[in-house]
Length: 526
Image (tube, rainbow, N blue to C red; front, side, top):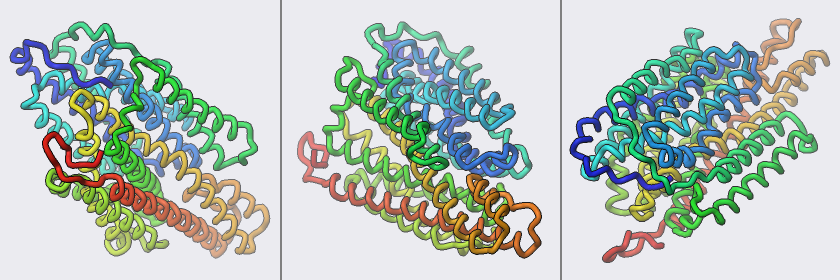
């Protein structure tokens, strides 16, 4: 993505329009942020209605995240090529049509297909929101405008789990997608009625179609192979074939970026060790964070017996601490650089994630304050100390003419980490749960047919149904086996996530080493 275009000479005449641009950017971006967090809490209700497997749930999430991560940079390039207003409106249009298809999906397969289309629309829409702000706000006002946009993004992210929990609790999980309709219509109305058509787009800007195709193909194939691996052996053609295709696709992407005249991702930018180090920290940290937040609501609802609304509220402390600590973390970066905020923040998050491994099968939401809240509070402190510094480091480690590219890398890394978390940690969770459940049920002395049914249905994770015909004590024993198998697998997941955070802390401490600032120096060893 190129750097934001310099506003036209008629900047003063565009100033009255800037407020409308900010409003429409907030409305459009809020759709993606609400969907991203609301659906995680609604997944158990969705699974129950469709009879979906755990692998289906992984696809419902990554069907959206994968095209979004792969095409964010390409979405920004489309705006440069065809005009930002036009491209922004197209992205909103694709997103809302796909959202309606999600809400009306008759099967889980139809939902996954609609989620893919939704991810494509979001990849076009999200870069457009920031590009429009950069075009209509001058340098003196741009920072405040982006800060306002960011604040509303955090608010939308915070409201998402609460809305998702309330809707799922009322058996209205499809409403998660219908929330988008008024937001989209409002954004489109402002764009159509209040803002002028695009000026001539940059004629010399070429679209890197090969880069977009190869990275999307590579990520999609790897995702497919890894998720299918959780249900089949590596010798299955539909496991190793996509894995090989994915590796080849990503290899071709690297070649196209090295040889292309106007690549989506100029790889030379990563010769900057500060940018490279911050990118590694961001990827590891958000892989751990997204992986945990995917399975935590399933644990709370399917195993611990929380109502969906309560499960949604459990994520509020994370966002409150993020908001409360971000300003302090930003000042810490300004004074001391990002090394220690990222080191300490990532390390604290790892401790909080490890605390989430201690609760077993609890007595329900009444024990939340003593069992899960301590870990979530510690994770929230770590998130508040890490999120702003890692983004700030990525943005301040490049020259001013590379800010657009750095912004795209920042957004893409966060989304790509979420894709990686679901594609790798998800199948591992499924395999560990199935193995643990088979071992536990095998010790109960059940009829062979009952054991076979439980083993066959283990792909549904905590929603694994009880075999028919069992007496009350046997049914209770199987239910306990399902719950503890999930808890054991969840403990492995959060343990791995904690390890990723601690590796991120080590990378930050070693790579982001400060030097004595001098004239023209950033204060970091480059």
